[in-house]
Amino acid sequence: MSGEAAGRDIGDLAWSRSSYSAGNGGECVEVASGSGLLHVRDSKSEAGAMVSLTPEAWAEFIGFAARHTA
Image (tube, rainbow, N blue to C red; front, top):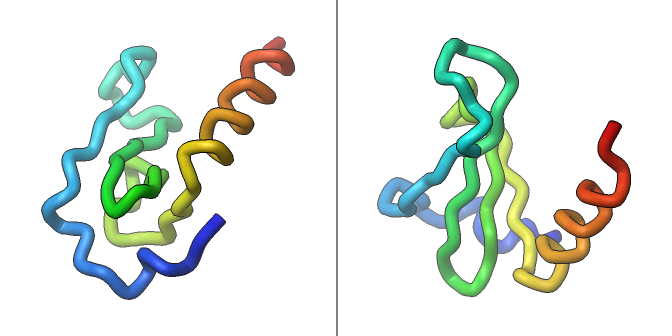
């Protein structure tokens, strides 16, 4: 993870939401790429906290999540 992007203007990032999101206010995250990092935030709190990951860390996280689904 990186705090490097925390002080940057991220207003021009193109955020994507999961296709599983029904758009009804449920739990969802948004992902955007920029500056060589992937940024993840809560779709209900766009101005809130954001996590920035290297592409390698993101791939590792996605692999972990795929192996540990219910």
